[in-house]
Image (cartoon, rainbow, N blue to C red; front, side, top):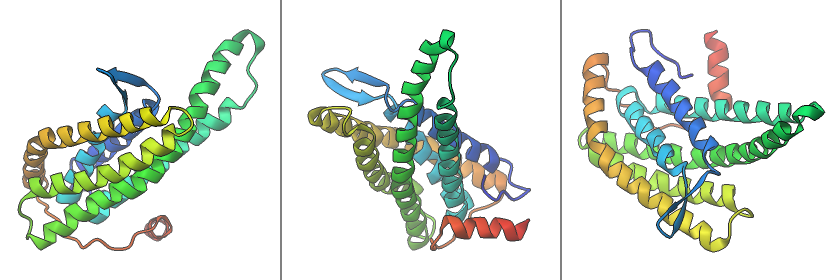
Length: 234
């Protein structure tokens, strides 16, 4: 996970919660539901929590730690999907063939959803924490609620466009694809508006409890750079 300082009480839990919610969201990508006449993915009602968490982590613990948490989530997601995809290819005993077939359907879709989400997260989630952190410096740490709303609106717009397109092209019709896009982004905006007050309270609590309020400039960050730093630390 992220490089957690020993005196931080809550960063490990927040990081683990981020990874857990991310994996739940991917599992639900192909569980379609009806909202009146509109079609939506049930993952829509989960993924916004990851943006909520990354905003809080970036605001309290800093941009670099938030970025490490996101990379950790992407790596864990890809490991989960790849292992499942490979093990599904092993032969299934004849008497359990129906279960093997069910797993094949689920895990093949899960692998596609995981790759799609990884791409979308590396665009949308990183834009999200970039703006919330950059604006923090510009306004000297004020107006977290406004920065969170603005950065989430941008980040989730990018995430939604990429993930809905990559996950659903070839599976749902184009009109349904547009419906999923509209419903998904609309719900995210509603969730962000409702969640900004709890997020603000959580930020205040964490800053006081942890005794930290990091201001760090967004810098270039790559997986190789992160892995090299971990090797040096070990």
